[in-house]
Image (cartoon, rainbow, N blue to C red):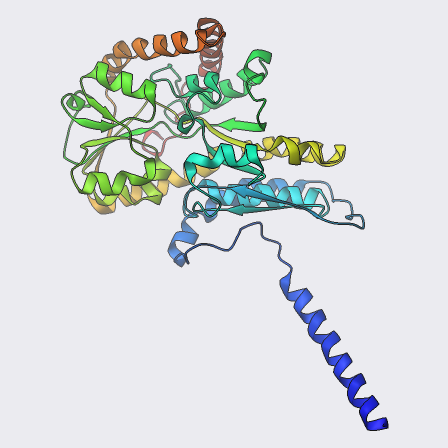
Length: 399
């Protein structure tokens, strides 16, 4: 009998030790979800520089309070692009910052590579509660937030910095204070909008000028980009940014507009011969969370989530600059010629842009907005920030 009791006690002790070890092993300080596919060490290393700004912000933040007893709130955030694009590590560090500031009470996991659904369903999945939030580009969801479509109109005139990226992004923050502009976000809790370097024009063949777009089949980023390409003499087509490699390599298209992060993550440098870079079109990138999960938070966690927007925005420029250094090296190694848009081409491109602007004004005015007034206000903010960035060239080839 005593032997049996000892055996039972030994077994119970062993089970307790296994449980303790398992519990310790399951905890993690990372907000990254398990990847759908294992990435190489090279791809992981290529984005390491992008995390510096957010990590620094986390280190400087005030110590977080201990999480109270009770259930930890868990959020799933959809990131439809690959892990080796420059925005993924920024989102992971953004989520880590929130976890630290909340004392572990709000635990956010970032799911890349479309693990939570198609890129075209990002917003509807947030609305329906399939996910708790998403990062994506508003240009993929025409009509959902119509006023945001002016962010990606061609040739709006940002100057200085990296092809106008910085004055445009800062103008975005100004227009986000406009009550009419904010009123369109009734389906989500919009945390922020940001942009990136201007969309590069890529060609599968050797070209020397933007004017060679004439007669070519080119990928357009959106309806307004398509209108502009037509005005320039090209034939616009609509394809997903992630389908560029296949369509170019199979000669379905001659090229089109892509951003540097897409050139990097889709390895487009393997199937093109020329990149023309300069003021053109920009991406209206956003980060939002669902109304229901946000409204369910206590006030202190709501404040942390809202404050996290600036933490993310502070990390954007360093991430873009680091990414550009990498992409320039990829282009050089692949023998792709990089051409900075000439003043003559820029003037020619500007002359064709107002038809796209007017299309935007007409579209949003038909929905009850004063389209011309909101566009004029936004372009006024761009001019204000142009003065601040004049002469500050941050693109590596301009330094």
